[in-house]
Length: 314
Image 1 (cartoon, rainbow, N blue to C red):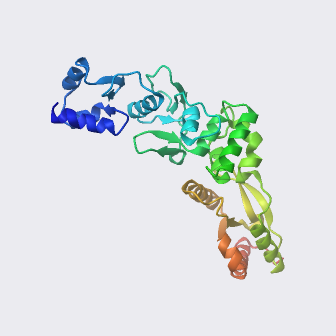
Image 2 (spheres, helix red, strand yellow):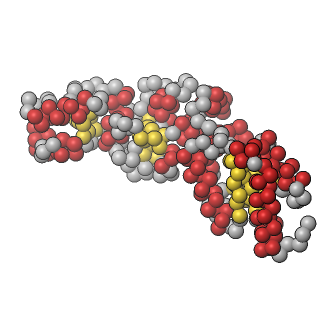
């Protein structure tokens, strides 16, 4: 066996015996040399652009990886993603992927979904080249293929096991829900359970800040005030003074613990800024330990906003 062939085997052994045409060509072999090895039985075609050093049949994991290597934008989703994450009742023998509209998957046994709405934070890249939908995106996708009771069971499973936060679930809901989209109706029925945007009751810290503002002489702020953002989505503000467009947020660790949640907060902040809103954010720790400082900051900004809008004193 040549040195090049040994290198091919080493690459493949690290990745379920699969290797791509591009990887082989980077070792110095031409298309003709690859075809010669296929004809000689050293390599076996699994998918366009993907070869194996072993003869089939290929198992679920190999087929999933082959699709991801063959179709650069393919991502394991639905049943395949649920099985990867260990979601309750997920079938273990099904290959299910989501690809952009117009893409082609040659594995005829695979279940293929088409979607161009796949933000980066909905996808997790694995070390072997596989891409899989995040837990929250997986739960959303399953809402389009499961009945309501089964979908609720999945949501309770991932929540009780701490596999993702309510904020992540709510973020995906707002990213993807829309008229005619599979899964939207199921998510609408479950929005109050899963989403921060479902107008939850005030937390203890929000209530504490609310009462401290009133005690300091400020008007009573509106709780969970809805604002339609330029994107068309609706944001619900923790505490708001709508007449002077002042939003006060308490950043709970549960809702703001992940990168995707941080990114969503930034997007909401930009949308509110475009609409002329001023947003103040306070951490849980600040409310717990420095409540008076937080209240003083709100009063200062409230007075500045009132002067800006020409509002009379209360």
